Image (cartoon, rainbow, N blue to C red; front, top):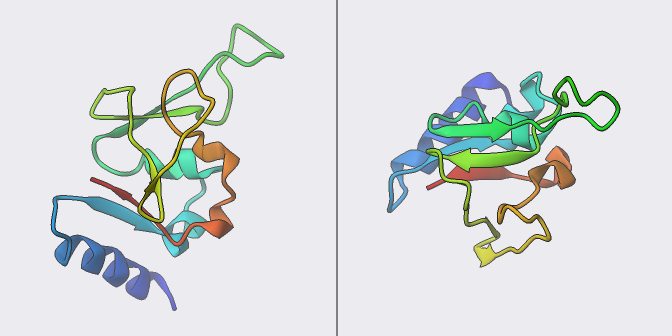
Length: 110
């Protein structure tokens, strides 16, 4: 396992997909200097993250991303293992920072 296999597995996910998608794999998430899955997702084209003001210092934004936007849309449908997932997040998206990166095999954006 290494960088080459990580790139190949991400390319194969895209190549053999029925729809247009982009993906990052677990090894990509572990190799990136990001603090959470949310921050790793911002490296996918079309995905941005929001950062809210820190509770300790409201003049500065929090270090970690708090929500995911796909192509500017704040209502993002999230599935885990092909099943709809719901969150208590008032913005409608799943809180990816609640998931340890070690539990995810890949994240796909369709």
